Length: 152
Image 1 (spheres, one colour):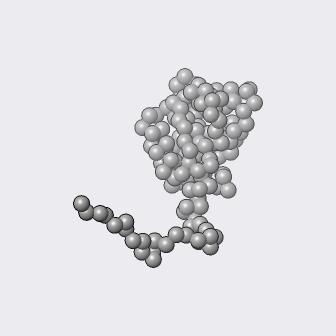
Image 2 (tube, helix red, strand yellow):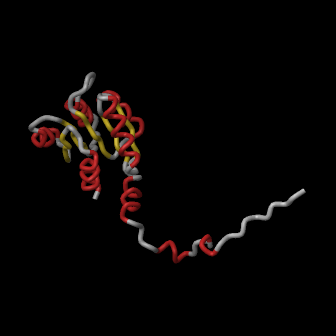
Image 3 (spheres, rainbow, N blue to C red):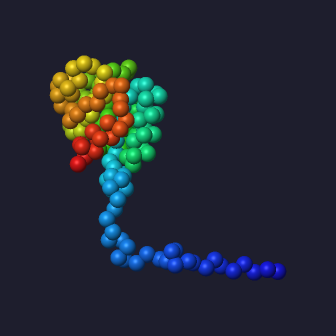
């Protein structure tokens, strides 16, 4: 019967000491750590776009939930909460306007980023009390920059 010797650790695999933990965190990792605390609720009726947004935001480190309309969003906010609402304006069942009205009537004060193709997006966001808007079609890198600016 042969015995298997345990692998020998090389000097490169030496355990970390406490001084290793004081090195600065690289910027990319720092952004992801910061984002990991952000719970984003994506509210979008287009299933493909919703799925793309969820995957992209999760890859960037956000905690993400998704809803296909405002009614689903209200239920999710009530059950799990959210730190930020990424909200489409034109949806069936409950559109963005009605969703915001319902949130406000329930006393829910959550930052909202409006996603819209409307030519008057800035005015629309202002009227809703949104903190920002992103134009459609979406640029995913621009979306991340906007979300990072908001959470800075």
